[in-house]
Length: 205
Image 1 (cartoon, rainbow, N blue to C red):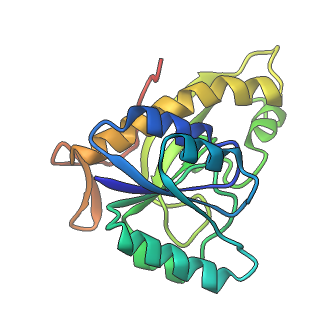
Image 2 (tube, rainbow, N blue to C red):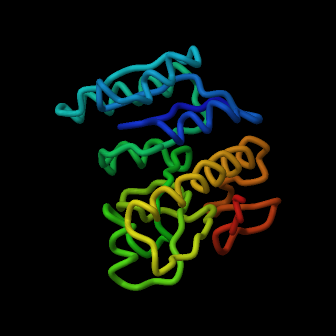
């Protein structure tokens, strides 16, 4: 399975994917940030990569479509990509585009999820891998992992604890997709040839 990854920053999820690559191959990395550390990581692993100036979104999205076509990408992964894609682009890529989001969707779409969980005094926090549709952090949920929230936690500590599990959640999910154990069929998510009616819960320990 060939994969194109979109990033904006440090590229920690990208690096986890590059270290894993069980049944899949990352063929290109795209960043909207020219100084993103993730571009250095892609170069280190010998993966072709591009910086896209997102001020002209239409031009940037066309380049993304061109790259995914040239690479014959089976999957596009948003791994810490901080730009919102147009509904037109998402419709063209669906269901071959996924995102990892640091909350237990449908709770807390958008930014500052760790702080919002603390402010609401939630007992549990987590991350979600989902198909991307035209609404923000909204598409069909594929998998989730959880962490407990303690009295000692702050937004930074929650983010650090969750990140380690995010890496495993994403790599394991993409691995299952590469094995076609998770797939989109007959307008629904399927897991091991059965409808996936709720997200797969993964411990990611």
